[in-house]
Length: 286
Image (cartoon, rainbow, N blue to C red; front, side, top):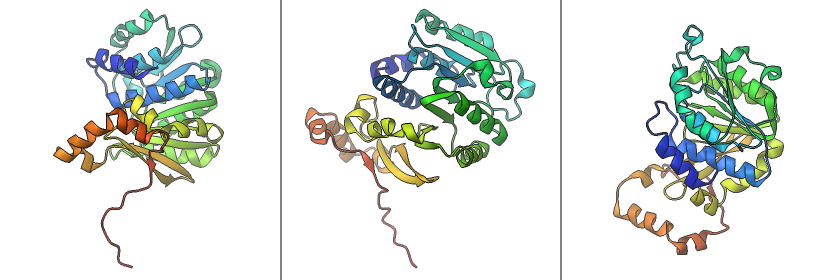
């Protein structure tokens, strides 16, 4: 999916109730581009679709002739929503998915607790699996395990709400998952998502995360940055906007204009955008 398509999605989905941000849409679109450029083929799955804000994008990412989308949500079965993480409406969801149907993309709905899903029921070979269901540790961990068991060789799992203080269970589930599934690693965190893939496939994604031109093309040019930090026995890319770049100032305005010019893009072409932690200016006392 090209960035222009993501921009169109952001505009059309702006009125849908939900918590899926435009920045998260750009991140998903970036993964979609990388997968398609590298011949990664497979269906898409989402646990926790609410009113379809992110499902619309996943449907647009699918190749209509060969790929489909599946979603799982409790919808009206809210007695099973023990963590109270969302309250979807199926009728609203179905109405919002008309744009996906118009694209000719097939989708199916599993209206049940995701703990009841199994690989034999939903199939395997998924290239993208969005986990945004129950936020308690056991719920999120079970969803991650299901995703891992159904993922294609070079597929990606996107986990919602990592490291959020409101949802510590998601962080616990992430750590427990990586402890058990040692062939997986966390690729990048940002836009309230963490993306995971098998270590053997990580290079195709990491090579793009480090390119200025790739970041610019998908909407993560200035003021966005990527830095690398150690996390769970690997190097985790962190996609973020530094505090100093969020301030309104003449200097930041000049930088924004400069980074948008062809001269800047040529100067930075081929350079890696992944940075080590910036100095804080604080001294430590031993």
